[in-house]
Image (cartoon, rainbow, N blue to C red; front, side, top):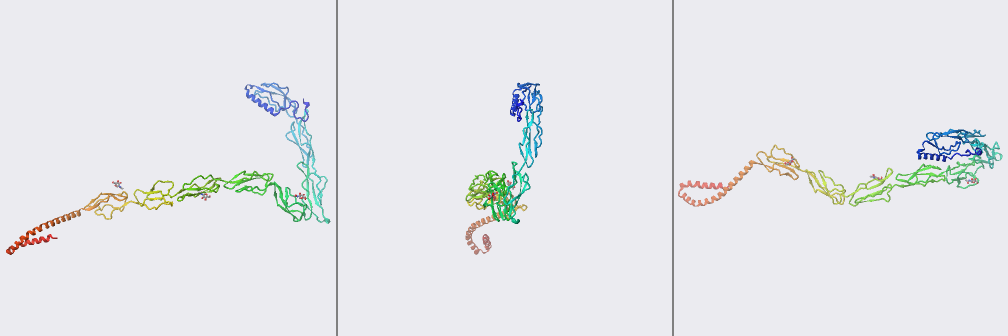
Length: 608
Ligand SMILES: *[C@@H]1O[C@H](CO)[C@@H](O)[C@H](O)[C@H]1NC(C)=O
Ligand SMILES: *[C@@H]1O[C@H](CO)[C@@H](O)[C@H](O)[C@H]1NC(C)=O
Ligand SMILES: *[C@@H]1O[C@H](CO)[C@@H](O)[C@H](O)[C@H]1NC(C)=O
């Protein structure tokens, strides 16, 4: 069995180690079976296959009682040894990991001009690698594996050789020569060029480019020269400038004269660093220094109402730019773009979309709302009122920014025909209060108690959004006593003014009588009941006396007028006899005289 294995086979012959999936699948199966059959406690499953050891006799049973021991031996590649594994009381087999020790390959020496690298160790299954010193390249395999060969372990590869890197002979240039000490162009060797001098040592050519180049290596460790050789150019001419990844916009020629200019443009996907145009200088050199084209992008496109950062001239491949929008605008699309190796920007350039405010749905009673065509940031909604109505509030609302959100900055006003009615001192207005005072609406005023409304007492809202003339007021109610009040008691305190509902009680002086109610109250229309008066008692008797005297006189006169004519009539008849008497009886005239005297006397007193 063992003899059949080839030197390159890592796996020991006969029974190959089980694949990992089988081992783990088996373990999983064992666990599942353990879970499914609790009665299995007290026994071990058949042991798994080990990569380092195998049973000495094939195992047929699937379960083993605790305490069972099985005989194992180490596989080829491991130091040969036999040992036992035992089924433990926890239904596990004893550990085998430290039972078999790998055989080790011998450590190889470093190759000439190179090194050997041991990765972990040199045991069976391990790998070593080889590298060469600088200036040398590996000839042969770069690694070796420790494998089984018969009963021992060996490296599967011989150590490689390290070969010196050599360059081809440096390129020859027209009108120039190479200064070199050796014919063997090894790695690191420098060669220098020189231009041929003209006749009699006069300078005929200019050396353009690096005068020296050296032997180096390419990525595949082949020898190569560090750069192109210089050129020997006739004085006052320039060799065609060469700029990698650029095209000469102004056209190419084999040779350029003094002061000729050329213009460059980088190829697609490249950006220029340096001047776009150069001029042929006196020493056969282009001035200023030639530009260079490197992979990268032109600045990304600008966007309306937005910008990008960073803002530089040249963007290298993979560089990111970040776009942002002005306040009031929302970025639509990707916020960052990347410079691709193709020299363009990806993904698509974003745009800045103006932010919108919410739809304006509010209505204005007795007026109308004028909406702008678009409700974007800065938009203005205007409000106007119907004729005869006055706008109360803001006449416009703007779509403004509040933080990052947009909103209308003013609420809808109201259209009212008349303002609030004016107030009145010591009174108030009454009437149905509505949110607005419409034309024709009337507002009445009433005064506080103790005040009297003077004037019309109401106003109305006109079509000119004003109130009609306000020509009333509340006048304080006051009462006063007349300036002269006869017979009022002197001790009584008399005030100049009496307030609404104030009482007064009047008393008269001695000898006077009160006529009317003794107390009165000050009311809106004056004293109530009306003020009383005091009248003198003596004057009353005098008046009564006069009246009685008059009555007596009148009666006397009536009597006199009635008595006298009758007496006179009787006296005429008696007079004749008297005269007779007089004439006849002169001594009797004394009696007659007093009588006529008396009558004449009475006559004169009866006539006032
Ligand atoms: C210009 O032409 C020369 C040969 O005439 C060539 O070597 C060189 O590469 C050209 N340069 C450009 C930029 O085309
Ligand atoms: C609303 O915004 C406008 C414009 O910015 C401003 O003129 C106005 O005063 C603002 N109104 C209010 C109520 O803030
Ligand atoms: C005035 O008299 C009336 C009736 O007697 C009384 O009700 C009222 O309170 C009095 N007023 C004052 C201010 O004393």
